[in-house]
Structures are given as C-alpha cells and as structure tokens.
Image (tube, rainbow over all chains, first blue to last red):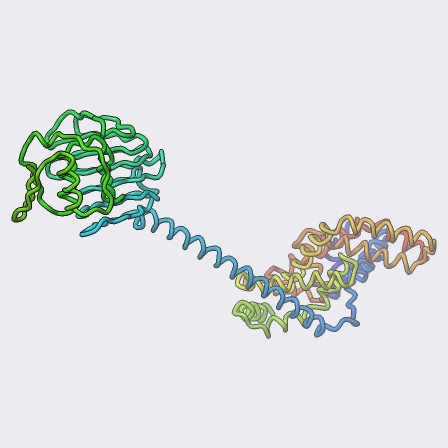
Length: 316
Length: 188
C-alpha cells in the first residue's frame, strides 16, 4: 500500500501545506495522510511547525520613531569616526614631519661651512662641539646619523671643544695631517710652513700618512711640510690661545714665538735682527696692551732696542 | 524584486540617505521581530537591528550589489544576535534561571504556555538550521513569499526551494518532537 506513496516525501508535504502543490499532488498527499495515522501525525506536525514559525510583528513599534533613534545614533557614530579619522591623519602628519626633520637634521643640517674673515668667529657645530676660528680661517663640518665620523676640514687656525661621542670620532683634516679627537680641548694651526697641534685638556691623536702620536694636556706637535715622523714636545705657555682669550700668556716662551704671534695679532712685520735674541725665554702675560706697550716691556726685559721703520719693526 | 534591490544597494553605496531610510522603514518590523525571537528582549532587539543598519551605513562602500537584500538583512541580524548573546551569556544565563524559577512558582502549565514554549523552541531551532536552508525557510515563513518568488530572489531553482523547505521541516520536527507530543496530548 505504501508503495504507491513513495514519491510522498517531506518536500511534497511542504508544498502541500504551503499551497504550492498541484491538484493531483494535493489528492495524493491527502490519500497518503488518510492511509496511516502516523502519516497524519507527521502532516499535522509540519502544519503546526509552519504556523508557529511565523514572525509576530509587534505593531506597537513605530518604525519611523525607530528610524529617528537610528539617525541620532548615526550622528554620534559619524562624529566619533570623524574624530578617529582626524586623529589618524594627525598621527601620520606628525610621523612624516618628524621623519623629515630627522633626515634634514642628519643630512643637510649636519653640514656646515664657515669662514671667519676679518674677525675671530665662535661657531657651535651641529654635533654640539664648539670651535673658535682665528682670523682668515675656514672650516667645513660633516656629521650626523648617516655618517660614521664627524669630518672637519680646516684651513688656518681654530680652537676646538669637542662634545663627547665615542661612536663618532671627530676627525680634523688640515694640510696632510689628521687629528682624531677622543673628547678634549685643543688648538690646531696650519700655514704654508706646517701644522701645529696643542692640547689643552684630554687626549688627541695626530697622524699623517706615515706616523702618529698621542698628545695629552700640555703637549704639542709641530709638523712641517714633507715631514715623515712626528715628534711631540712640551708646549711653553698658553700663547696659542691669545685669539680667543685676548691674552698673551708666556711661560718660558722663546721670544721668536711671541714675536710671531704679535705679527699675526697686530698684522705687523716685526723682525728679530740678532739671532741670539730669538731663543730668549720670556715669562709674562699681556692683556689689552697695545703693541707699543708690549714692545716696550720686551725692550726693557731684555735690554734691547726697538726700531720703527717703514713697514717693519726691528729688534736689536 | 532583485533588480530593485540592486538599484537600492547602488543608491545606498553612493551615499543616498533616502534609499537607506526606505530600506530601514520597509524591513524594520520584521527584522525587529526576528531579532526578538533570538534575543527575547524588545529594546535589545532594536539595538541589534540598529547595529546592523549603522554598520551598513558606515561601511556602505563595501556593500555587495548582487544578492537579495532581505536575506542579507536576516543573515546580518542573525549573526549580530548571536554575537550579542555571546557577550551577554552570563546575564542571559541568569535570566533563564530566573524565568524558570518564576514559571515553576505559578505551576500553571496550561496549553497557552505550552504553545509559546513550542514557538520559542521552533524559533531557536530555525536559527540552528543550515544557512541556506534557514534563508529559504525564513523568506517563506517570515515574509510569506511564494516558492517562485524565493527562487527568483535567491537566483536558485524552484526544485532547490522545495528541497530546502522539506529539509527544514524534517529537521525542525526532529528538534521539537517532544513538545509536539505534549501539545497533541493536551489538545485531545
């Protein structure tokens, strides 16, 4: 008997209950249901399920009011989104700006070229070091994050107070000589005759192509053109720093050295006629005295004569 | 119907608030009723629907233009509700115990209560149906759509609609069979 109903399945029952069945199918399903109480029960269960599965629309809710509530929320949401959006852009701009500033500081801002001209010049370098240039001197500095060293090219004379940075040696190139700084204060001078390095505090390493010496406080090295070996010596007095202290400090300094400094400082041409006078040691200090006063002191100390000539001053 | 939906979604994507409002007004009540079958709390059900529409509006650029809007909305409400329940688990557990206690107090197990219990059970069983099956069943029962309309809307064959409806009924009956027996006895 059931054999006749093999095509009656859940799909067919659903169709029947939902009014999707054809007339022939309706008859078949009704026959099937009548043939067996279990079939009838199954059909009843399906009917109950379909009926109870409808949605109960709550007609007391007004969808227009619901829309208003939604719109209030949307306004709040877009505000917070706008706020987040702005915040994100502020962050992006800040990052770009600081990256740019970093690159600028380390690529462009860390290069400097200065020329002292007619007066001495105190210059703070980008790495925080200070240099005081004597007249007619020039310096170029390259440092920063992207360089392994702090390179200085010097022409003329300068005093350095180098800020400590072990990872980046401070290297001064002057003539053929390189001065590598380990954190210190020192004076470097170079002219057509040669190069002089005098250390005031700390340690400085000086080398040319062949040789190198380490100078500690109070020591100096003089390197002449084409000189191979470097020999360090004691520095007498603090004459070298006259241009930034405005003081001439002699401490057993040979007269010839003082005269050389005076020639530079006052732009004059003083000549020591008697060679014996050159090595006479002088211990004194001058501050703000005029050239004439200084020469008078020298003349009295050594009992020598000062002759003022045409463009030349002679010591006899 | 599908073309109209594609058109509406297109308008919403381009930022047309009027089209968005239209969709909300058209579907709010049935979505709210649907969320209620899962959440069983009116205000929370509205919040669920709101969440779905807020997301549709704020992320409207990401909307897909193909597909049937109504099924998409049912699916979204379904997922949102389940998410919500996950977060509210502790609280809802408490509520269920509390509700049970109150029910036991009255001890009045009449057919009316049985009928609502049955309905609750059927609805939670619907929510556990496989997604495709649930989708077809909901459009038929929630929106009284004909087989042909469902087939057109979902771009599937009538045969598939028939299969899915039969499958749904079979699964649902198995899940609520105990209740059906009780109802049968009580109605006799």
